[in-house]
Image 1 (tube, rainbow, N blue to C red):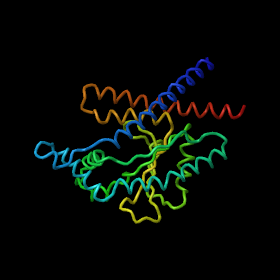
Image 2 (cartoon, one colour):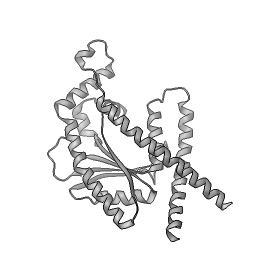
Image 3 (tube, rainbow, N blue to C red):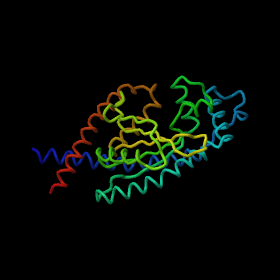
Image 4 (tube, rainbow, N blue to C red):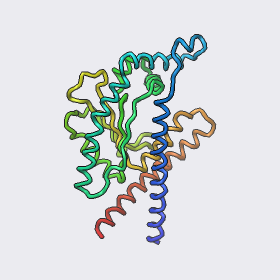
Length: 256
């Protein structure tokens, strides 16, 4: 019986790992497509565009004028080498891969406008710079749940950065079931108009679930979305259990 349960757990983990690899490829493709996308300008839209389209176009033009994308990329480029060094240090300490992979992204004009609306804020670049701390972001995917805490702890100790805010959605998941650790970092020396960068740290299983949930949140008016959201929350609970079982199995293997 115990053997059968172990096989089921391992099979589930292998399936999740496979799907996570697919989701990683999907993330990269989506990132590339965002770089190639072209938002129509206000002039091109004329009187034909919706209010939302005009807000997005205005946001993109303002971002170009103030070099937002370039400044976000500089923040990312400054942090990523330190994450790579940290990854090597952790490997030297634990003799295994603590980090599976890391990605970065710059918030798009569409995402910025959507988030400002969601927060009932004025839709302007000034308000975005004042209130949004995740215009530049890095995501770190770990193999095991305890590795998430190891990496988050190491991130908080990186030289040249101060921790502005930490949110632990593992101990206190969102109502949707979302689990992750979010860290807002501020470079101690910067003259950029982008003051902070967000670092998300989660397990591979958490990441796969989060990608599905993210897709759903943009289709919340579609038929059947409520049922899917309920099932996703149940899946989040199951994945959290699998994360714990995976950690337990690893510790048992380490004792052999």
